[in-house]
Image (tube, rainbow, N blue to C red; front, side):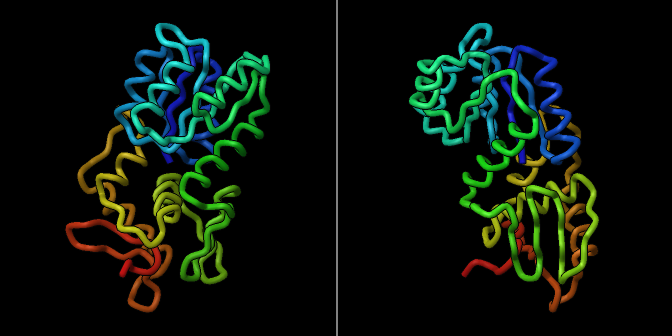
Amino acid sequence: MRVLIIEDEIKIARNITRVLDGEYSWAVDISTDGEDGRHMAMTNPYDLIILDLGLPKINGIEILRDLRKNGKTTPVLILTARDDTQDIVQGLESGSDDYMVKPFDMRELMARCQALVRRSYSRVDPVIKIAGLSINTAKHQVIYRKKSVRLSAMEYRLLEYLAMRAGEVVSKADIVEHLYSFGSENFSNVVEVYICSLRKKLGSGQSGEVIHTLRNQGYVLGELPT
C-alpha cells in the first residue's frame, strides 16, 4: 500500500511514517505544504491520504474539495488539531472518509488507516483467504496450507497488494506505483524478482501455484479471471 501524508509538522509526519513503513510495510510519501501536497495527491495513485487542515499555501479543506471535484476517490483521513464540531462536520461534508483530532493514539490511527484501505478494496474482513493462503492484514501474518510463512517487508507489501485485488490482473506498472514511495530506487526487473521469491515461499508447480503470470498483462493472485 502507498500513503501520502500532507502535514506541515514534520515530526508528526515522520513518526507516522516510521510506523507505517517499519511495522506495516507501507510505502509513504510526505508533503509539508498544501500546494505540493495537492499536486502529489492529484498525480499519484495513493491508497490513502492523511491530511492536515492548517497547511501553508493551500488549506486541507481546499485540497479535499479539489480531489473530489476531479473525481479522485482515494480515501482521506483528516488529522488535525481542530476539534470544533463545525470543523469536523465541514471536513466530512467536504469528502473526507474519517476525522481524527490531535493529539492522537498511534494504534488508533493505524487501525483507522487499515480499515479505510480495506474498505476501498471492498475487504471487510482483515483476514484475506485465497486458495489455501491466509493473510492477516491487521497482524501481518501469512499462512499457506496451515504453515506460517515468513516474508520480507517488500515481499509482504507485494503480496498484500495482490491479495487486496485477488482475482484481478494487476500490471507490473501498477504494482510499482503502489509499492514504492516517491524517489525510492527500483529496477526494471524488481517485480519479477519479488514474484519469484514469493512463489518459492508459497510453493510452485501446477498444484500449488497461487500467483499466475499473464504474459504482457501482469499477475493474478488466486483464480484466473474468466
